[in-house]
Length: 542
Image (cartoon, rainbow, N blue to C red; front, side, top):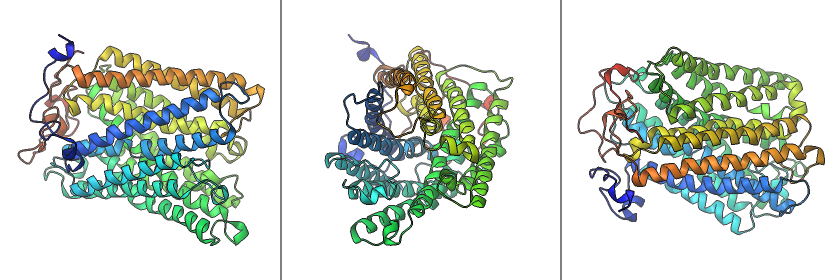
């Protein structure tokens, strides 16, 4: 008899098995099931993007052509970026863990608009399908930013991928509307604004950015199509348009979108650190308000991507100042997390290691971002591989790390089972070593002048790319180890109690996994979200 046959059964009264069949999933309005559907599809697309990234690194292992032409490399690079940004990084934490846990954390049985929630998943899937159709039609080679004037002149079929990005934007908008309305209308009556878990604060700030900023990029993409198919001069200088206008419109959305990505990740860190240090989080209100400040100031810094575009000097100075300013509320979070850890009763479990990895990697991303805000250094490193490394430390080192951190933190609650702790430590270690081995050489190559988005390079950059490619293999091994560990946990992990980590938020008071209606009665807030003396840990040794 296999170990899977002897593993204890999952609880019967669960959103996982109260309804049967594919149709019950595709028509569900249960926020937990929708979160699981997002999780499955997002992980599939992530694996595809990871394989494309590995193919790019193999091509760059040596100088000269390995197995890709330059146009093929550009197409692979574009698809990698589109999937990672629009299908993984932006929706990842809000769509999966926000959908699953936001209602539970505020004492609600679902989001305010359940059918709209399901519609957002279908918009996501429609955009994803169109992105895949664009591949079948030959793909596009513009890069994930679709910059003009090239996107207006390329022979590639740009209609399908731009429509895909447009639909994915609608998915984000609908999710943002739902989250804002849910936080305002469905909080349990005894939960005030400063009784909410900090993860909810991160989602709330993110939702406002999605609602306000996403329509801008949607309109921008439509304008590109109007110019291409109607010949109206909007961005094309030969027709009386302004190509710099596209950059302004694109980054007015895309830089706040950076915080759409990272604020939920910061919210996850704010949940993990107090749990595993067994302390009330230091400076709760400062962390909560800093999320709103990051969202607000982050919406004003878009043009720091354009310091070399010929912008007026006063504009460059203004955006440089605002970029340095937005680092202040981010630093508030980091210092408050460190203060929470100070003299805490720290228990080192996999979720805490992910939080530590986030602190290290995202801090590198933040500090190297300030070199772009400094006008003199940005001229030297603009459009080099230094930007590639900075971007990945911020986005994947920050958001990607905490996507897996959230999985390892909330996996027992979502599936009612535990994963193997020892395997998790191996996966995290490989992930951390591989990540730094992959991207630190790109910093060095960029400082020495290596351009980004190139399919080939001069011999003096060979050692940097060789180390970077080896790092990609280690990173992929770590990600594979982490994913296999979670899959084995779903199949044959030991049962997890309702509160395996000893948390103090409302989600710790419901069974694991939660039933379809998680609260039979309106929950009463009798203590704060981080008062740990009210709960005891139900530890499971895996």
